[in-house]
Image (cartoon, rainbow, N blue to C red; front, side, top):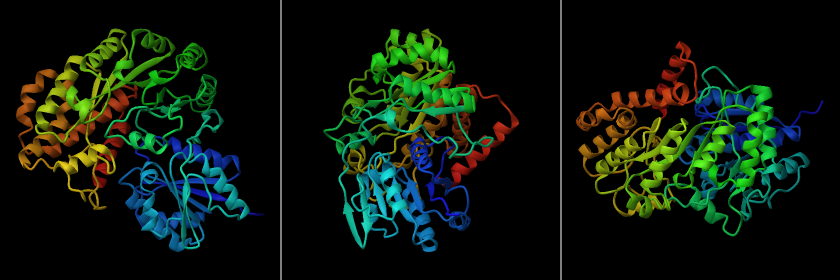
Length: 491
């Protein structure tokens, strides 16, 4: 009996969430009769991972990476290709979309996909099945016969309704294997029209200039996926990962809301831009089942938000008004904020953002550290102005994180320590504003490890019990502590 073709999907880590991009690719492979498997390289020592991957003997190895994950994934691939030299390796995801030249320095990479992989992936699968030439694979750089063929990026997926639903079986469900409790992620659409300097969307839009950036599935298509999820997995919550639910055309959203309550009836979370939050929109979504809402605040300094971050027309007044609407209608909500900017007085900046959050009264205020990704506008600004060395991210043994310490150099260790400490205590301070005078003193102390643990514990609480209604248990606490320790080993 002839062996079915096999594709091995490889990620650095699932980070206890779903990876919808590769799950859709897995569904595409499944439709063609391919066997699929996922490996997370951070879960086991490299030799054991290589042994397991080689024993499965895939025909295609498909990697997906965010920036800073490429080091481990390429090392894994080089080792695996020594054992499986005939297996074809393809690298995709945000990092390789903007850094296809990685394959020029690593001969173990056979293909790099730029942009949405649903277009070239089935073409590649067919070529492997037939043993045919794939050097003209759209959206991809392809290595064949010692030569690299650089094919154009072209347009993104024009009709999202034609894509299969994500393969939810690719990432096995295990106790404690997900944050957000018994929650499933869904994307209504793709694309963001904004050009924030810290986000990959600005470069993605430029890469696809001349093509339609924002696209949405039909309400019927989304509801069909949700009915399947309800029947097969019975989730307690749905997390819409769209950057801004208010961007969805109102006719599509109206139909979705009208049918969701009767056909699905599962509480959901949606994300918004503050200036697009209106009373009627919130009431319609609440009636449909929205229980939690999120808004990006990022920075309270409107000048920096406009000039440094290029966040567009987002004012503090609009931010406050949006949270007032959510609070008035008793919708749980959280703000998304960044700390540690490349500015002259980062402490003042972060304290003012905390104060804005206190005025907005979110259910939870989430704070991450600014991570200026290479090739973003804010990265170039930080390097140009002496806050970041040009080679700051060249060391694969020292990877940055948005949850630990700032990568910026303020040329004053005391300032850096206070910035790091304030980030860890910011969310708790928003919840309990009476602590603000004390926190201004606490950030001076060399207690960063303690504050780090508090930050992770607080973050874990809100992403399980606080917002998503997970039931408190000994298992939940143990899994949370293990997750913190595992994360700290990596970053």
